Image (cartoon, rainbow, N blue to C red; front, side, top):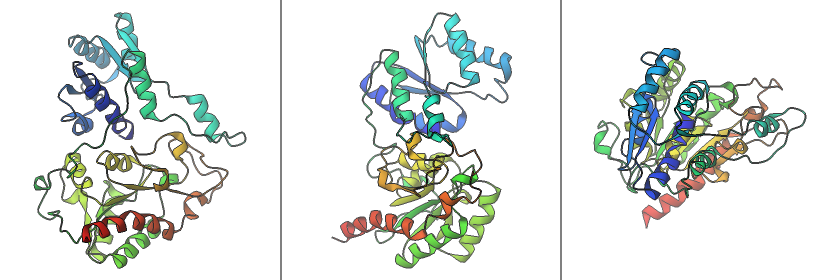
Length: 343
């Protein structure tokens, strides 16, 4: 989901800078809220790769469906096995096709154990833009938010969520990720939440995440801390979650999809990094470097996506981060907003 979310600023910039261009984004159903109302000349086409377009036979059917649209140029922003096969078909059909360069050699150097090259790599935003430039559409990355400056329409959410009172602080917390090296210890995350509620008694904490582990964790936290709201129990889909995110004063997230989702709503995101690193290029859109909380260790990063086990075996990259560091950065974001609203 994060990779698709990072394509949004690029597609938006392409659409607004080339308004006569008709753009169709092909992805899975979950991505529709990103693109449905992005720009008048952007359409979304969903593909169910597990059932309707499964296997080579399914990809051939998808290719026929795509050629019926009479596209003139194809941009492969994914560069995985399925998109490679479709690329091959389009190339055989003499379509103009370009694909993303993921700079895998540079990524291997960044996560190398013995000969690590510690440098900032090109971001997916830049890599996606390169694909469009090769197709003849150079762009300037210009994007603020999926919503107007005032945020999404809270009237579309259940009454338990809003409206937001002027004296409240709304803080999002997304404490989980797909891999262990990307997860801050849950007991310390709870310490952060409890201290924030002590500092801001009128704050509301919105817990983002879906899954069995999240259900158990969030249920306990909401029982013990009445200011906490288990978001997925009240919201039906990702579009509603994006609306809520657009009204947060700050989001606390791991290096996960929720970091990217909140970034697309122009919400400040304080992100926690363990085995991964912003140097790999996956920082949220328009998030400043000081919003990344991380420990300075020579072994970091050990993985681009966080799917490798900790070489040290002690997850020092996460355990060395103190709750006070996270709270301090969140307070630096919240307090200027509170002072401004009180004027």
